[in-house]
Length: 460
Ligand code: GDP
Ligand code: ZN
Image (tube, rainbow, N blue to C red):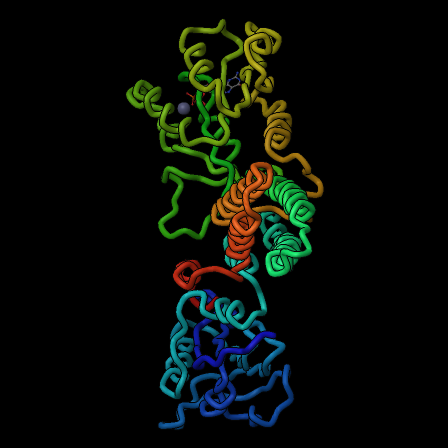
């Protein structure tokens, strides 16, 4: 049974600061209604039905000064985001007014919320698990529709449900083994050993399936790090310009992001491409192009995807061969550009040298650029149409815990094979169970939880 923890009442501005039609100040906690009532004149919020909205004014109780005309939404526990009493005051916006309202609430008994504290309470009060909490953050940061859909799916508990089922599986086996240890006269050891092993194998398989989604999940969540390389004059800047044209460019809300920073995001088939070292490509002066090789080596190192451009209207040169060589272990697409100028390098020639997909384009004439996009999609997104409804592992925290759980299960299998005493095997089984629990937060240490929520933005 879930015991609701009683926390103090917190307040924060939950809409982005700045100009906007309305902004919302949110209060959560046992005294949310009481505190809101002190500054809200209109309906008596203590008497209204839950989940109703009321017109009124926010007034400073000390000076009787009217701060703003507002709507107050009252949502009583437990059917709220935090499972606590929540009051949301929607006001006319403007940074000064919104801030004044927040300050009034703080002066009347609320405490300023920490970043992510509303979501943390939803977690502490058992409304969501850690994977769902993480998805709240992902939703805020999602750069493409696909990223948003995956986060939404996770928010609805897709990953949590799978992890919980695996944990239950392990728990059943552990419980059964406990019985064995307590009643050895039944002498069922052999059978249970084999059962533990089978269970470890089947849960490992499920973990592998999830881990297979991790690359796709990471890419959807944080973007596909992409390096555009090629000798001078092959069309890198032209391709970059095409990719960053207005309908493709993703405007990030990261402070200080401008066109000349080293990272730009573009959307290709609903996935975010994080273009690496675009400053190096934007620069076209000879000097920069000369130091370009060292620089592109660095970009290639960081890349999930390399787009290697060759000028197909000229014979392969040593520089092309060098680039082909040093990108050969990367996921890459070879782009035979300047197709409009005639073909000195054929796709067949390149295909003899590598398994990497080859696309023939003219960036200048905007020919076959859709084929390039299709090739990117094919290389990284297998279940493209349905990946939005798929359960994906979306971050490193989840992935490394899955790996840890799988290792513990490998020990279980080995232990049974080596005829180890089952109470020792049981320890590894318990470890796997704990690792999985850390993903959902059921067995996560406090520091981890604090650290995780501190990455959230204020008001969430
Ligand atoms: P970079 O040095 O690799 O960045 O190459 P740029 O993008 O600056 O292109 C060098 C020159 O090639 C420019 O004059 C471009 O307009 C031209 N160019 C780029 N792509 C094509 C193409 O597909 N066909 C033709 N004919 N010219 C191109
Ligand atoms: Zn260039």
